[in-house]
Image (tube, rainbow, N blue to C red; front, side, top):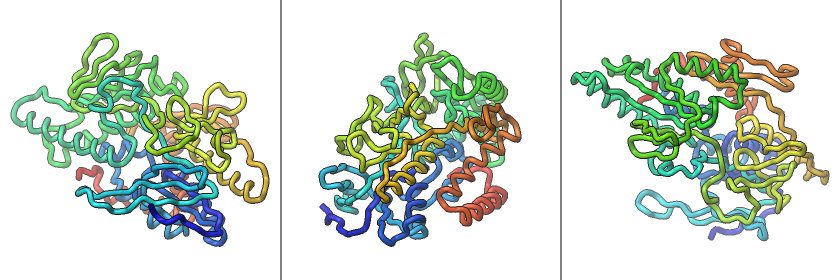
Amino acid sequence: MGAHLEGKKRQIVVVGGGAGGLELVRRLAARYGNRDHDIILVDKNVSHIWKPLLHEVAAGSLDANLDEVGYGGHAARWNYRFFHGELEKIDREERQIITAPSYDDRGRLITSRHSIRYDYLVLAVGGISNDFGVAGVREHAMFLEHRGQADEFRQRLLNACLRTNDENRRGKQDAKVRVAIVGGGATGVELAAELYNAAKALRHYGLEVFDESKLEVTLVEAGPRILPALDPELADTAREELEALGVSVRVDTQVVRVDEDCIETADGNRLETEITVWAAGVKGADELPFESDLETTSLNTFLVKPTLQTTKDDRIFAIGDCASCLLPGEDRPVPPRAQAAHQMADSVLDNLERLRRGKEPKPFRYRDHGSLVSLSRFSTVGSLMGNLVGGRMAIEGRLARLAYLSLYRLHIIAIHGWRRGIAMILLGHVNRVVRPKLKLH
């Protein structure tokens, strides 16, 4: 095991470089620098990409190489430390975390097991899709939880399109690419629309007898309607837009089994599919990938108090999808959404400063700013609410698209700061003009 990291500096360790974790370490480093604090980010990946963009990476509409953030370079710029490793154990008695050893593809040791001490620990390890125990999901369905999965989906989709294009050239006119998306939330809806955008562009990339008419996408939702976070009228608008593109939307349809080439529903139907994507709900890992005696829910999320401190240890916080926070007066925990992770990062930043000054931490207040769903270049729908508009307002069209784009821009500013963030937004506009519409490799 690696040497115990000693020092007099107040050490704050954040595990997980997602939207909340990366923003938090950037702001902690900006506030405290390297004077009397040591800020450490631990992540099993080497780069960050905003999770709501993964459907665009999967469809090939977004080149993740241009939009991802390398943790090492980000750490050097903002004066925190990045440790590439996977959390193996939380040792609360010694106030340290243990990271697992890593190996290359030939089984040779790259980094040995390490211990990293902490004065305060923030868990921001995210969540995974909830398979609800449905048979065959983990074996046969694809997920969009990180970049590797999005890249794998893009390659499988391209192979299927190339295969169908070849079959059409040989006279098999009924050949199609069949994709089933299980889950009618934002991820499923946005992916369905983005696939048609990508298919429309493929004719310009050497697939001369392939277009969106050769794509057959089915969106399956167990509930009575898609996009339950939106007003019913907006959800109906989104459904009409999807069906106009060619998406078959099936609500009140529960999937009971996933096989390699089909899905089975509770009403006894079998839906043939070449690619199945599972985007139904969020939970913690099936089994925690690290050893911990912290209190968890049945969905393997960490129970936290209203201050976002874990129920068993006030020196450990949890934020984002991995945290279960039931606020006073509410009947459900804070929803696993990007805006919640952003607000939780703000709250933990404030509470760590309060603790530094010997004050009591303040309870977290969640403000629902609404929901926005992009149907690729075809449409955007959503609602703004709370402090943004003094109530609740349904929006669609150009205003909704502008609001949707602003979410990513705010994320860029949150992790890069105002000056660099604005520069990167402007660079992004240039990249969209000069780079290809699709990434096919």
